[in-house]
Image (cartoon, rainbow, N blue to C red; front, side, top):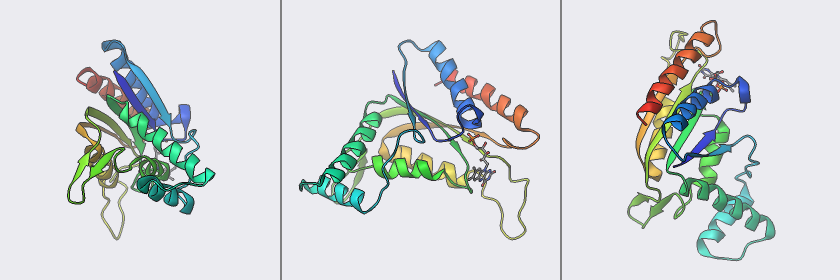
Amino acid sequence: MNILNIVTSPRKEKSASTAVVNAFLSEYKERVRDVTIDRLDIWQEQLPEFDAEAIDAKYKGVSGESMTPVEAATWEKIRELASRFQRADRIVLGVPMWNFSVPYKLKQLIDLSCQRNMLFTFDGEFYGPSLSIDKAFVAYVRGQSDAAGFKTVSQPGFEYLSGYVEFWLRFIGVRSVVNLTVEHSWDGRAVDMIDAGKRQAVELARQF
Ligand SMILES: Cc1cc2nc3c(=O)[nH]c(=O)nc-3n(C[C@H](O)[C@H](O)[C@H](O)COP(=O)(O)O)c2cc1C
């Protein structure tokens, strides 16, 4: 069983989302034999910018045109990132809320890796998934909760994280997505809330 574990928080051992995901993975490894974890820490990975050269590499990659050395290196990195998804039997990630959405570095990973004929197909009419993955586990973490109200608009809860991440996972070929949410990760309730999140993650790992 090859698990792709995408680390999207830069906070290493201080990270609540990583702590919850690690609790999930420890329990999963206890229960399932021959588990390999491919840890993709997007803050350590030196992801290329998706700039003009990367976009040229993408179009030349698709059309088969020859590339400059920089374009070729970028395209190679894109293929390598996509191959880590292609090798995965399961995907597991923690996602902190950043301004009601995902950390920008996760979007960068998605933009780089999510290429036609790598993670999805398109025949001119229909999109389809390139992957065939039974399950993903996603732990969403936020510092506050909707209790911290606004005067002008209502809070969206986890909608802008979980809606997009779940859509994208299904788009590339994940059939079932198991979610967990943790709130109040940076206020006076943080220790209790993160502990509760870890316990819930352990329970979910038993059924994963
Ligand atoms: C750039 C940034 C933006 C954030 N935006 C929000 C937010 O919109 N709502 C919220 O409740 N917490 C927000 N937080 C707090 C994080 O969601 C919280 O600290 C969470 O625990 C981070 O996950 P981590 O501990 O795994 O890094 C933000 C934190 C950062 C660094």
